[in-house]
Length: 487
Image (cartoon, rainbow, N blue to C red; front, side, top):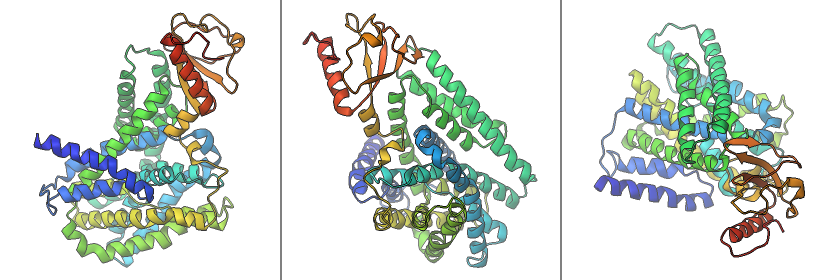
């Protein structure tokens, strides 16, 4: 009972603290990490935890679902115009960042070249959870498609960092491998598995017609695990595969999509809590003092040299204005993936593993606290926040976006809409039927489409009009009114 009570308190604190942190634009991962450290051996909790293998397994699982949710939540229609630049930032940009940090670690921190490159690889990607959290909490309406650029880059650059980490870790421990073939195989196989599972998942979900709606979320969890494990089994990049699968599923017509989006939003947050609590337990705060100088130096170098160098090198080619490049450079938060990848040297038993983990942990804390807090005021100072654009259209998992634009409505027995063609309905002005779900199948409606009892309509329109139609439909179902919900 004591463990259950502690767990309940942790979940409540994590959820409620987000209200305060959101107000100041600080990612909630800070509270998760802090709770983990307080529960650890150096804190009042006194829990001694140094099982890096278990931590790696737990964190990989958490990161898997965070990345799947990142793909599932990305609105491809909005992200498409910046997909190329975001993709190059997520690949070449990560490689440049890793190389520059590696050189710094060798020449300034005293690591060997391979150890320096390993550190650079681990910490080369940006944190999607932090970027997403700040954009969402602040409703930061960035100009010129900067929001989708930042979100797509941060959501898709972890696979490249993972690939570089495994390559340099393998070189250090002496695993014989052809780097070129490994790089090519990881990307190609990971992408192929992601596409196959994603396309297959869309077909399966729309045709299987499960009797219990809640089982669809279980089905999707299984498909996400299949994508990750299948790619790994074939020597591909599992994180890339699961991201692509989520991207395809999230941007396809899908049965019960609204409930799935909300479910995986919650699951992603739950995984973040488990992930950061585990990492907080794994770190020994008393050891951070010994690497504080190295950590601060590394954080400053990444913020003011490594990240800007990679960003300006790439975005100048796309003719992005200086102010926009400056803001993208600042949004280089390090977080979940970096700390997770820092557990890999621990499980491999490297002598410098503890030092690398503590530096990465320190950098992530400083990065999120400083860069995360100052992101909004810097964006405003640069004049890149505009009321004419809305960040809510960048992502598909915002409840505000869904509630504003979409509504599911079922046609019950006795409804005046049953057995009528859409063209014969007196629709409320501003409402459009965009999809019909019938017997587990998805139907794209046209004017002559005849509606049937038990059809589920997906309605699109302004929030006020949709809510009015929904209220009238509910009254009719309860026998409180005779009029059609459309009139």
